[in-house]
Image (tube, rainbow, N blue to C red; front, side, top):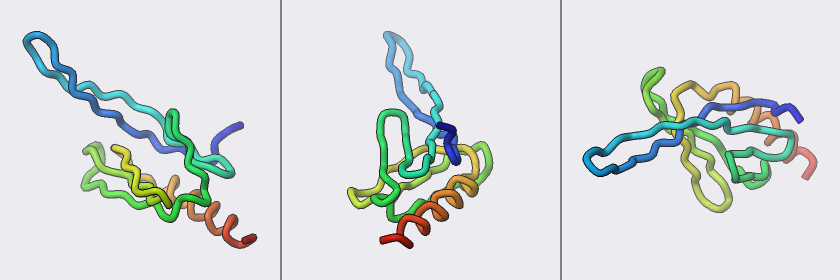
Length: 100
């Protein structure tokens, strides 16, 4: 099934070799489907997410996307504005709470 929205996230690792330390960045997509947000090997049901916020000072700099869940806050690194991703989440959240 095609995701409703996606947000590119960055994973940052420090690797230490024999004579050097380097930073390795990889990326993955945070996906929204009709009932959950999926991040690599984690799944967050829409009903368990209370809010999404972010902090990004400038485009291309590393910022933070926060998933505020019933089990705590999960943080993801981002480099681009997540407006579309957040708008899709808020629309889904409104739709799921209307029927409760």
